Amino acid sequence: MFQSEPIAALATAPGIGAIAVIRVSGEGAIELTNRMFRGKDLTQQASHTAHFGTLRNRPNATGEASIIDEVLVTVFRAPKSFTKEDVVEISCHGSEFIIQQILRRLTQEGVRLAKPGEFTQRAFLNGQFDLVQAEAVADLIASDSDASHRAALTQLRGGFSKQLKELRQQLIDFVALVELELDFGEEDVEFAHRDRLRQLMIDIRRVLHPLIDSFSTGNAIKNGVPTVIVGKPNAGKSTLLNALLNEEKAIVSDIPGTTRDVIEDELFINGIRFRLIDTAGLRQATDQIEAIGIERTQQKMRDASLVVYLFDGKNIEPNELQAAVSEVRESGKPYLLVGNKLDAITDTTRETLERVLGEKVVWISAAKQTHLEELKTALSSRVRTDAAVQTGSAVITNARHYEHLTATDDALARAISGLDTNVTPDWLAMDLRVALHHLGAITGEITTDDLLESIFSKFCIGK
Ligand SMILES: Nc1nc2c(ncn2[C@@H]2O[C@H](COP(=O)(O)OP(=O)(O)OP(=O)(O)O)[C@@H](O)[C@H]2O)c(=O)[nH]1
Ligand SMILES: [Mg+2]
Figure 1 (cartoon, helix red, strand yellow):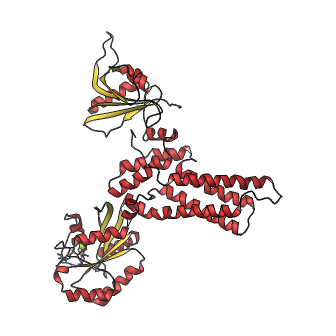
Figure 2 (cartoon, rainbow, N blue to C red; figure 1 turned 180 degrees about the horizontal axis):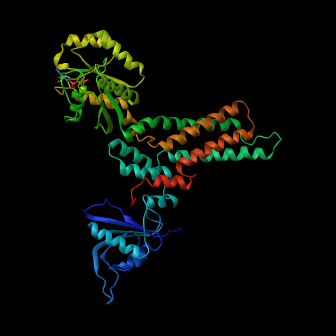
Figure 3 (cartoon, rainbow, N blue to C red; figure 1 turned 120 degrees about the vertical axis):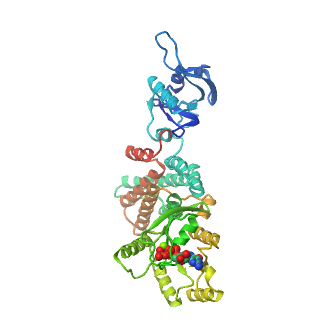
């Protein structure tokens, strides 16, 4: 296994802690650590063993080497390590000073400080995993919800990239045959069986489509579902936001038009991150500031993935409600109808309004904080991320993957219609090449330095 120059970085979070771990990887990692270590001879120790001892400064004029810290050194020998290189992990006491001293001492021994993501980049370049999995390492570290954690873990375990690689290989075989036909120029030969090629392309597209479709879910898992609460002034939107967040985030009053600007905060429901957005109530504005607020409400509604239409069950005319709800329907966004002030209305009113709307309404009392659990359940099932993630099916969370999957799909669609119209083999080969390129770019079989640079620089140092 080829080993690169040794690099080192703090692998644990910066700041004071009980212990800190410094990771060293690359050619000579074990030997050079051994030169600073007093204890067993590390160069003679087996892989995956840990050794207690002291790390020392360079000897002074009288030959004395002062102690930096008592440490535990774990030795991993190539290729059985994360980077597939020789790796040493030094567990020291978690003081900033000690960490700096050890890193400085390492550089004296010829080690370079690692760039962000450089360990993972080496692991990828040495074939430890493919690009999708490398990116999943970053997502895993960044995951802050149950759903994002599970999505990253599925990807790390190989998720969809194994399947893509197999299909790509089959396609490569076909492209080779089609290109062979090109060599025969004018002669009318067909090495690539057209029906089988078509079937393969259809099969690949069948694998691509659920992945492409999962991106909006995946994006929601990673970045939160923008959920806008809209309705007339005084419907109780701000009261609802506060109740869900358990915090007096927005001003509530019985004066219509209280909220004039958008107010946002995050909330986790059943492992899904929602970005809740409270807005200015929708009505004919009474002044210029309110008009700007209402314009912002409309903008937020356009950007949202989910619309919560909240109405005051006590103060709304059936016709008015019907008109407002049909506007929401026309927006084409997923929405939820929520009736508020359940504490202040009769069953008859509730039934009348439901009948007028002709669809399911979640009834709550934002002020009394009742039925909020039902509302939360309705919100999370409206997103339906859980089902996909829980069954372990792959979810695309990465815009880069999404773009390449879409480009692959487009190229295959072109190739299939090319088959239908009997295009010449060179046209066919061109579309197939494009498809291969994009498929390969996802898993990292085709990469450029720029791409790797941009992916791995997003990692933290020490990873
Ligand atoms: N009885 C009752 N009153 C409520 C309920 N929820 C809110 N209210 C009252 O309704 C009034 C308006 O509440 P807000 O939360 O400010 O309404 P809003 O929709 O944010 O109004 P704007 O910001 O003006 O658009 C306040 O006086 C609340 O106390 C409820 O569930 N029951
Ligand atoms: Mg408000």
